[in-house]
Image 1 (cartoon, rainbow, N blue to C red):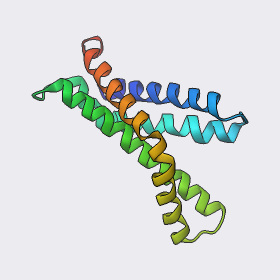
Image 2 (image 1 turned 60 degrees about the vertical axis):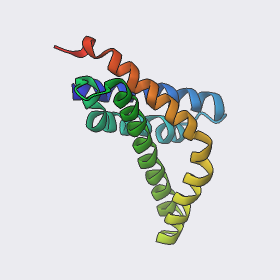
Image 3 (image 1 turned 45 degrees about the vertical axis):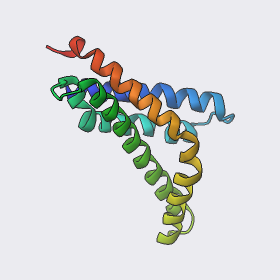
Length: 140
């Protein structure tokens, strides 16, 4: 069950990240692909493996609503981890000061994430609902 949830969220984020990089980022070089497609896909797989697996069980009351909320939570935590990793990489590449790291995290969350937060919420909710609806396919 955990593996299927991890694969589901990994594929979902991989498709979204690849389409975002392909449509919005003109330079299609390897570092951009690694940092903005591969890394989010791996993080989403780990978050789906840990947080998204209970969606497949569907034991809670109001399971449809809980699946949507778990999808939003999984995507939000994945996005937050990605923001911290990218800010840490940028800090280590430039100044190596902790205040610079905090400034980057706040800047990315305030300015970059506000642009993407609606998409993260909608795609996370839809991914959680679709995974919940398809849980019979993954059951043994």
